[in-house]
Image (tube, rainbow, N blue to C red; front, side, top):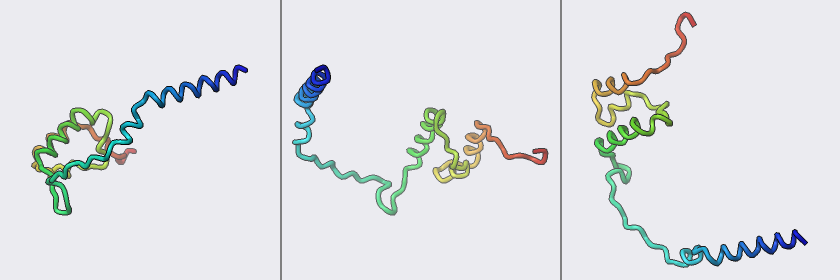
Length: 105
């Protein structure tokens, strides 16, 4: 008897939930097409703006680097986004990298 009461309560709850939620209304709306954007990095010959990529690196270094690493990105790759050698050395000096074993093990 109690299991029947549980099933009836569960079924009633599901029916009430489905009638209250607006999922059916949003599914009935027609699809809206997004306007086409012309990005500088679109296409095969697209390129990124160096200033925006440098801002992205700054955001990464200040926010994301605490949890996420750039383990497979070398400091020399920073020259590709417009940094000169002195700027790359200044960024690299902020970090300590563990080197492999030496002659003593």
